[in-house]
Image (cartoon, rainbow, N blue to C red; front, top):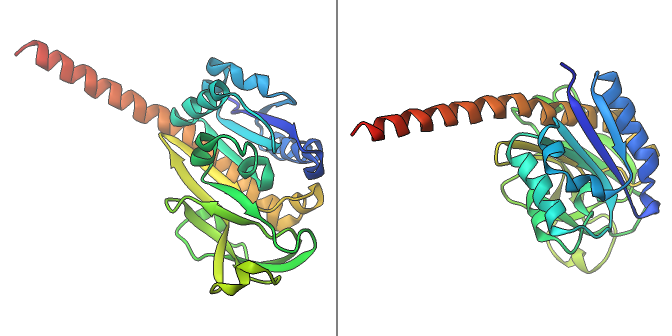
Length: 244
């Protein structure tokens, strides 16, 4: 059976959300996903639809979302639907909603030097197969400074500071570029690269996103099996209690 993915794009046009959504749709199509692309957040109003998906890909920057829509996405992810995205399309989506930020694992706060900063993305040695065979690489784009969840598993980093500013008065820090985390039974994947579609289309970035999509979506089947086991144990326990 084909896995189902939903890509939702919109918000600030400067991040080229339609073009980025097109790249992601192509990647998922090549991996034999059934892909739906939407340009409205209203699709997040259908909880049952979201629960039926294997993967949700937000490509939406600086928007407004209702609490019900966030709750629906959160419920789907907690029940195994994967959540994966990049740059401001996922971790600068809804600045007014801390529940979204908690779920995704972080929130953009600055990009010192703005676009055009030359920096290295350093792949972190990890047991995760998501970065196997991928070497450190250089980019020229925005360098994201994020406030992030200490629970995330960091797969790649970049060193600050490069550009001078008030933050440079502090010690050097390694800021996450790629991370994973869990939300209930669901898998969450984030990559801070992707200011414009040409950055998303870079071979290393594109491959990282492809792997992230597959990993997040593969969690659905595992989550459903775990939920069934939990239900079976609960049912057995209830029968035993009734016999006491």
